[in-house]
Image (cartoon, rainbow, N blue to C red; front, side, top):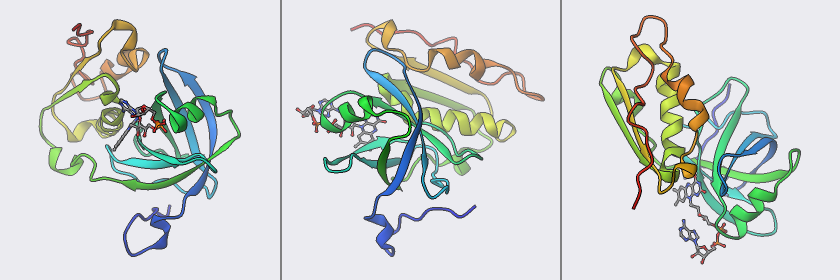
Length: 190
Ligand SMILES: Cc1cc2nc3c(=O)[nH]c(=O)nc-3n(C[C@H](O)[C@H](O)[C@H](O)COP(=O)(O)OP(=O)(O)OC[C@H]3O[C@@H](n4cnc5c(N)ncnc54)[C@H](O)[C@@H]3O)c2cc1C
């Protein structure tokens, strides 16, 4: 499929693409996971770790990390912490409603350079959102990477993100001893 462009050579850089909310659920008291698909049906074509500018039409826009790896159905996910106007509106968005999306932007993680290496992934709080796209990428191409270890902390246990996905991340893949070592995952208190 065609890859979206975010280069200075295209006016697409400044024009939001309408994207529809296909699903949403609360992950914690303050973080909501949104699943979106661009109305043009094209994938974002993003690298793990990149972000998009998400606009609420008539309001303004905010940068939000893409927290999923590229998918065949062209959907992508955003983990949004309720902070103010844009993120508050994203928490109120109903399935079927639209936002604007520009990007992807940012350099992302150097997935090709990381190939063949053991990786220790470290994230605090919502920092796990951009890292999740790399985790999903590594698990989708498990044979390309060495040992994967995740160290993730949060101020309170209830604030740990994507807890329900940890068993799936840990599940051994065919031909590899394990998927991702997550035994170190625990909440870090002040
Ligand atoms: C590259 C990048 C990636 C990001 N990825 C994510 C992501 O994946 N998920 C996510 O939820 N957020 C992410 N953010 C942060 C997000 O962009 C901001 O929280 C958002 O712009 C706030 O916009 P708003 O309109 O909701 O709040 P506003 O109405 O602009 O602000 C409301 C109030 O909250 C304060 N405030 C705003 N943001 C923060 C903050 N982060 N920390 C403390 N106080 C703040 C403001 O100073 C203001 O007083 C990212 C930011 C960057 C730069």
